[in-house]
Structure formats: C-alpha cells, structure tokens
Image 1 (tube, rainbow, N blue to C red):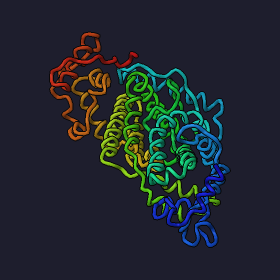
Image 2 (image 1 turned 180 degrees about the horizontal axis):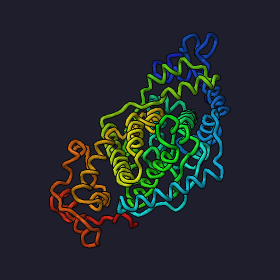
Image 3 (image 1 turned 30 degrees about the vertical axis):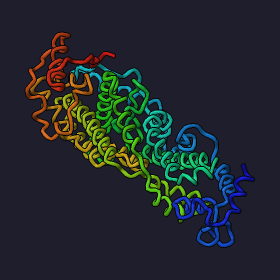
Image 4 (image 1 turned 180 degrees about the vertical axis):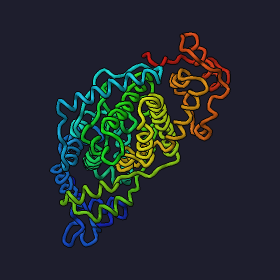
Length: 455
C-alpha cells in the first residue's frame, strides 16, 4: 500500500485528481504538504503525501466501530464536566431524591390516568449522567453522524476516490474521531446544566429510573425565590410525569428517534467551508482542532426535507413538554403555592433553547427546542377542561391522534367536536379512540392502538 501511494506522489501536477477541489486544501492541511519544499509546493499545487497522511491519521486515532468514536467522546465529556466541581451524591442526597419522587408520583395519581412508570430512583453526579445516558445519545446521534461522515466521502470527486483507495476508509475514521470529539465536548457542557434524566424532553436514562442531579439543582435554585425543597419537588414531578408518558406510550420513544433519523437522511455538508477551516488549522495543534469542531466545523446545511423533519420533531417535543407542563400544573394547583413561579422558570428555560438545543445545534444543526410549549400546554389544558383527563391522555394512544402544528395554532379548538369521556371504562375508552381515529381517517376503520398504561 505504501509503495503505491508514493508512486502517486511522483505524478505530474496536472495528474493530481485533487487539484482544484476542496480536498486539495484539506489534504494539504492534514498532510502538511502545502509549505515550501513539500510535495505540494507553495500553495499546495502538487500531489499530497498520502502515505504520510495515513500515518498521521493512524497515530491520531485508535480503532473503533461505528460512525462515531464513542470512547473518545466519553473521555472528552468526562474531562469537560470535571473542569468544575462535581461532588458525588451522598446517602442524604439519595434519600431526598427518593422521598421527593415518591411524593411527586403520589400527587400525579390525581392528575393523569397514566400510572406510575418509576421502578427505581437515583441521585446522579454529572459524571454519572454522562455514563448513564451515553447509550441513548448514541442511538440519537449516530443516524445523523453516519450521514455526516458519509457525506464527507461522497463530496470527493470520483477519480480521487478511485485513486485514494484505502485513504477513503481513513477519512471516514478521521471524520468519526472529529465527530466524537465534538459530541464529547457538547455532552460535557450539557452535563453541567441538566437537572433530571428527562430534562431535555427525551428518554435519556434507563427505563423506569427517575434520576435527578442534586448539585446542578442546587445551582439552579440559587436564582429563584423558591425554597430548595419546592424546587426539588417540582423537578421530581416533571421527571415522574416524563417517566409515566414514556413508560405507557410505547410508540413515543421510537417516534422521536425516527424523527431524528429522518433529519439525518438528508444531511449535506458545505465542503468548501471545511476546506477553508482546515486550510487555517495546524493538524498538530489538537486544541485548535477541537475549538474548530466546537464551532460547528461539520455542521450540515438544512434541506427542505430536513426542515420538515425538524418541524415534526419540534411539534412532538412541544406536545411532550406541554403535556408534562399541564399535568404537573394540575398536580400542584392546590398543593404548592410556589408552583406558578417554578412553572414560569422552567418555561423560560425551555423556550430559550435550554441545553438540548445548544447541544444538538453544535453537533449537527439539529435543534430540540419545544418552541411552542405554551401553545401545547394550553391545548392539553383546554382538552382536559372540556372532556376530562381521560380524553386528554387517550390522545397518546396512537401517533396519528397527536395534534399537529396547525392544531397548535388554535389550541383551544382542538377536538371540539368530540364527545366528553368522563370515565375510563374499557367501553368508553374504546369508543373515544374509535371516534378519534375516525376523525383522523375521515371515517375509516380504526387501527389497533395500544392503551395508555398498558404495553
């Protein structure tokens, strides 16, 4: 392999398949061939030293599987989060979390027909959050990362791909390592902000485990005119409500992941932007390389299809967060005077973008902001006030029943034409679901749908 690559270096400049393409500059930067006296000469006009480039990449990367180097990502995430104090929760923290979640789950029994989804509780440090959620991030990030890394190779001219041979695989590994570095930096920063396992509106923690981060919660509470106990209880209510929804709406988890995958399928990369950035980097300066990655070096361009997928994802996230907001509001309306302050603080935090938007935007240009949280909360509250909590929660029985972005434009009018469902008997539930499905399908037969609360 090495001798063939060196033979390529001896070709005249006119035979350089990378000449005049973005990859000429990329290879010059990575291979160090653009300086005077190098194979590329001044300005990188010759053939890059491919064998030297491969050796440099091999030295920089350890073997890994998949589109992202997750060992690198996890290591960087831990180092990033460790830049600030990260005390491990003690026995007292574990007890306080367990007591708060237990009380929260009891309050929610009166606010929703969905039963508890909690089997265990936990108080996590930031490092534990990274450890416990990495596998879920992997499921969410890899569909997009795979397309980002593949887009790098597809952007290379066909003649260059044929001549480069094994370099194509090395480029994929380089992209995966760089993507892993970016993922790790983003997750490390996110670990310093999240308050619970479900804080970003996605099921990141192990199923059935309600987890809170006491150290982060204490920092969050410092800026609020609310007691520490009320802050802990309110966040426990939100965590417990998320757990109920994801435990008893079995299709929801895959629905969200599929929306992310739909976004990833249309990924395209601005290769000229990478060319410009790489041309200004010293590949031996890893700190500068990481800064470039954190700045969105591989951030993709959004196509119309991606924008549509993103709109669907944002609508679903808004519905999840709006339902949690509505249910927690009902659970606290007569029990917690400080709930209104907490509700507004959480709404502002989520509407401003929150940790999820910044993380995914830095990774792949994918935002997870529930922009219409208030509209979604009003929709669920209006449906509950008109038809009862049973009808409100029955909407989650099938993805085709979910409100659309158009429904959020008129949240008070959602399902105005449907009869009220006062009790969740089997007959009433089946009738309500049938009417909902008939409305969606124009009178067709209703498909089989799982009942909320039963898998």
